[in-house]
Length: 121
Image (cartoon, rainbow, N blue to C red; front, side, top):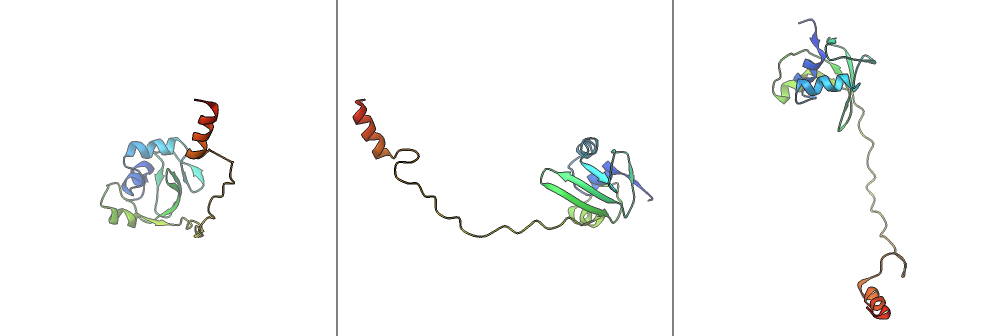
């Protein structure tokens, strides 16, 4: 197999749930092949570099194998090499407790009752 349509490969590699979604992403400019915007019908080959923008983030992958058929997830993971850099580590420190000086912000229930009594309602 020399080359495969881009939308078929994206569907077979399980980046999208359907070929229609894969084609829509290509038409919307969410998929780049070797730094160029790609149409769904563009043929891809092993070794091509893909930049894919998904709802859960950007992915950078290199095509390792070609397939037109959608298989199990373990088989789909063998179709590409993930080059996406790892996300930066999150800071694991505890934020300081919120400080509200007396009289600032919403009144407490007790303060609201006092205001209501004073206003005469």
